[in-house]
Image (cartoon, rainbow, N blue to C red; front, top):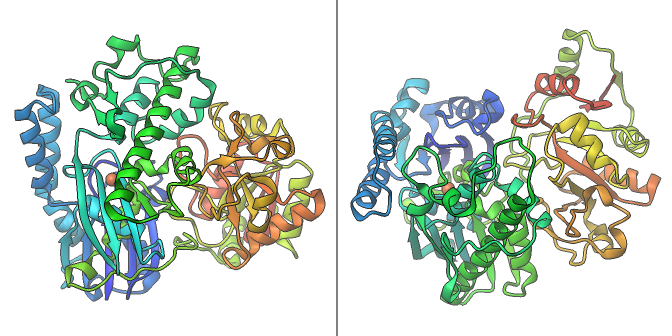
Length: 558
Ligand SMILES: [Fe+2]
């Protein structure tokens, strides 16, 4: 079966992936190709990249699966919520909801857009309920035969949180909490209140939280009685076009974006993160109880909350945890692409995802051509890992462009900016010179998998930087640039067979310094998508304070 899976909702993070007989061949978010962050348009560039990689024509596809219900499902839910008072009825809210429906309906939910771009196809086009697509994306990639599956996001057509039981390649639906009783909405509304971009910058709030103090009471907006969350959706949505609702009335004026962060905002971030962690724990406890499982799969945007994920794992509630690394809506394509197996009554192909290097790669010859086009001076390296380790050990900030691009929000050693984690000043240097981003956002370490036990309290297999856990107290001063203020880190554990070159680099750095850990942050400037092509990388390199660029076998220096 040759299938294309898509995320297209006009809301955010359009994406596409292609799979043959259950094997993921290629996946990419539209933003990487269009260079528009969180691009919500029809993912025509991503689809073309999938087809080109697999060398197939659109008419050779068996299924094209959209990770959303048909447009009317969302609209009918909205209308019902207007009537019941769960969605504040106002000119702007009704207008936005209707406009979204009319636009998507006109496009056949994306079907007509596909034909416009790629011509008629004999492929069957199907709509997959949004949370089912999220659930498949994590269960089918977990490698678990049986597991509790939890999806928590902003919203699907009607879903906000759902619980499933994965068993023998099938998913049994157990529970859905409908929007707007949504943990994702709760977090997004406070993200906006704190002056950041909702449904995008939630991790800034997570990073800010440890700087706050307990004491802010959020009971007006969320309750955690009986262990399960209840969000005041109408109070958070409000009647205008922006999220936020009644927050400012209760907690004072919202923070002006880019302004100084007063301590009261830090305290709000602390409270929001604390609620999120407790709410996630409550949902997980219910899922484990309903399924009788001790293995857990997570997806949905809230599952990107690495602090909450780390706490679930360290709580002892579960024996095994798999978080699909593209947990947000770009990863819905990974579920949609496998949904046709359930459609025809077959079992899902369940495999253990070890890597997400699912994007495009560039050969040295292509890279060299680009370097010559721009008339850049460059050196071809004999041993890329060794030379890069020398630069890092000398305190240089290095752009690293190698192999196939990562799918999902994290750079995992293909499109990364690397630096020495031993330098306490490095966090500030990279922030100021390269990322131009907020001072409090922590950077993450990549470490040899076998060294994780030396640095982390609980040496967990963590290939995707999606689990935060405590750095051993005696090691916090060894790798200060990647240890957050609360003593945690969000490591990527690197295995030799998964990414040999990146492994060699970290090992070579360890041989020079005694610390087999490097600082890894995504290769992009603030507010831009991660670089995709050599041209993107070169442009970003020269627009920043990076010292060197290692691109394929080539070294470019300033
Ligand atoms: Fe979602």
